[in-house]
Length: 356
Image 1 (tube, rainbow, N blue to C red):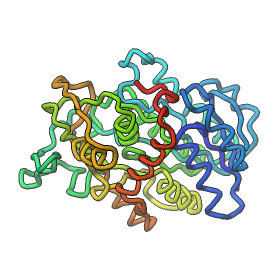
Image 2: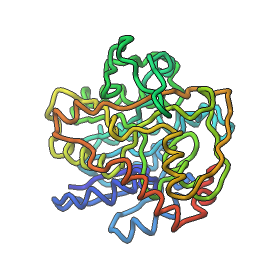
Image 3: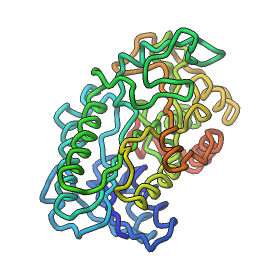
């Protein structure tokens, strides 16, 4: 089996490229990356040593895909992953759409031409930011928790958020472009008879991630704490009560492998994939963990929030568990220890990756 991974020199793409061949079956990886993201160049030599065939190419240019050989599956891990993309002064709205939607269209055309199956690692941010801010929450210790006694909307349970929850805008340009890419992928697969799987991921986290304050918050927070960078709680009264769950991409690789093995069989195409409630933590709780690991640090407060920030978002992976027997194997403490060890080995990591 041969697999093309776009965004192969990014965090997710790199872990998938390393993990999937370990599942056996003589799987070979062809990687494609435009190397535009700070830090991505550093992964090129690592992947080549692992036997990954790498090509330089930009998905926004259809011609960059014309010379690619046929493969069995494409995993489209290339994206601008920042929820503030298009509004952060570092990228334009057109760039976000080109990266996250038009680039995917070019990949889908490649799948149409070659018959390759398509897997899209999507995002939890396809769910409505307004609806997430309206969830019934209560403070419990140093974190927000769901207040089930007040009634929960469709698509939400104590396990987390899943399909059936609102995707009504505003989502963010990032979330909307990924949701549009999901719909087009499903349409292409149906129209041209190739298998499509979509995995809506929670926060990915692990060693080597190019985390920023807008995405990859677990990795960013641990590296910034270890490096004595200034940190602050933004919005929600500046107390750091907002909660997310963490998923190690090696666990996502296991689900991707199972999906490729199944091919086009199965009625369900879209899955919510995350660490779940067991791997969820607030920023204040993360700060307490960092203080125990590296020593106490002051954390500032900014009462005014940012666009698209949400107080609680945990992914319910029950559908993936039911259909594939899948669940994340790496608990949050192990993930945080892995990131902390990486931070000690690479004290200037945030400078390398351009994080502010």
